[in-house]
Image (tube, rainbow, N blue to C red; front, side, top):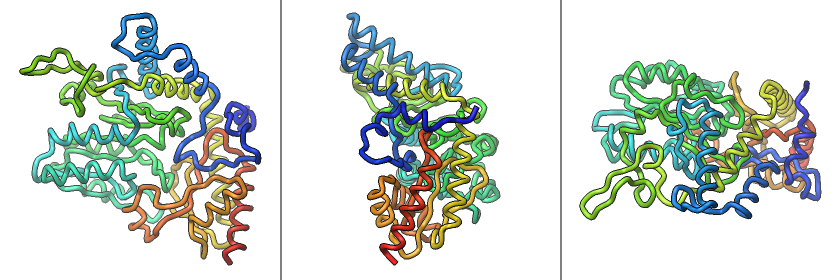
Length: 404
């Protein structure tokens, strides 16, 4: 049965409140939220608000149960072995910083190296840059092929016996490239390094199985997968988490505190200092539950159809140059328009109710590598339709006429 995005759109209130026909092509930045997620948040804040793991009264117990149920939902969604391998964070950035500041601080010594790629989002670059400088380690970046894929020969060369960490995006937020994470994990593990995957873009587009990928850590965000903002998760192998000291300290993540010393709770709680975002966790779980109800084969086929149609349309639009041509990709496409600044393209598109993104996409080293200051980016969600692509092309033609 074909995937019916027009029916899916009815689940998203944003399409009902806009005065015009909204063509939302910025899901890589943040996804729209289905009514099921909004309802879960409303239910919690209207009837069940309390902090988790603290209050012993009924509302507190309910919040604790829902918070831990959300943890289990995420565990099942990514096929982690145990729910205690799931740490709630404020998002992908927080998860990646957590690993840099805990694993990196503990294990990096002068002469070691950390390997990333030139396509990384700043969130998976700057934390490693900072900890490497502090610990006297070298930061290395895998280059790209002309198609915008990782140069695996270069990766094999950079990952050596001094490598302690390989941190790679699962899917590029600029090029759409899906990287061979399990293959890179095998290389990393062969030299005793760990593999960390930035899953911010991948979670909403690719079935994730952390055991099959053989990753040691995997970070993602709720708001890029139809959930609320301010919530994310970090998956980590239990034996690795158990060996790390907490990144932040405070309430709830301790076992015993005296004026002389403190002992910490086991994972994941030792990494969840402070008041937990119970509502965010509930909303994130509702988003993953919603996504799981959509037939995966049809959903992926629909995105592939949209992506091919968009690539064909852009290639057939004079003056438009697509950036990158990876063989395996998600529905994220960057491009430039000759003679028109990316910001101007987006401004004109907005007048046509087409939402696009422009800029460096928090990937300045990649832009420097490509010789660009920025691009226009389109990105699909489950609610995207072929008519969105038609509207995009009309907006590009209008921008070209205005700035000719």
